[in-house]
Length: 236
Image (cartoon, rainbow, N blue to C red; front, side):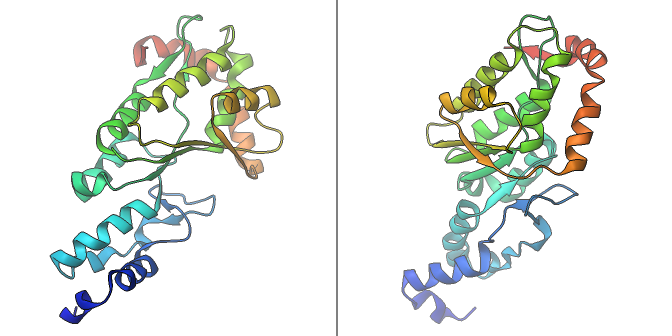
């Protein structure tokens, strides 16, 4: 890159960085890209290799202004991303999209966070120190509501929402917004109200018929699922 580039006004350089590095839709790290996201392979941060000066300026825009979508991803995939970009750049990340935390009721009384979800949230807490928004996905939110009838746990949804909120609130104080994707009929209105009462922002979107059918099928297997919680989940 010509040295004259760095002589341009900072406003002009930042505009160039945004045009090249900031995508209109979330950047997805899952194999199946949906919900308007684009595959991470479409991100071309080669500009960061132009020089140390350019990299320093552009990295903050790349990681702060894009939305990174880790739906259907586990903590290892998030770890690979954060490790790959380095801690300095991880601290620039402002917007993450993740699955709703995996929450169960192993003893029929106390709700518990799944180990995988606990690992993912802990990683976000420790490494994404300036996160502003966290968005949780439509499908997993509906799955939580659908499983209510399958779990013999009084007030499961209320307890699960409260546990998720407490986990989200342990993310650094920079967090300003918790967004939950919902659609017109799911979850039920009283569940939506409980989320809103906690200060969550509900974003209405469409639910694909195939996804809704898959969620219903999953709920038929919760008797087996609950038995596995004793060994696979930790209580809070």
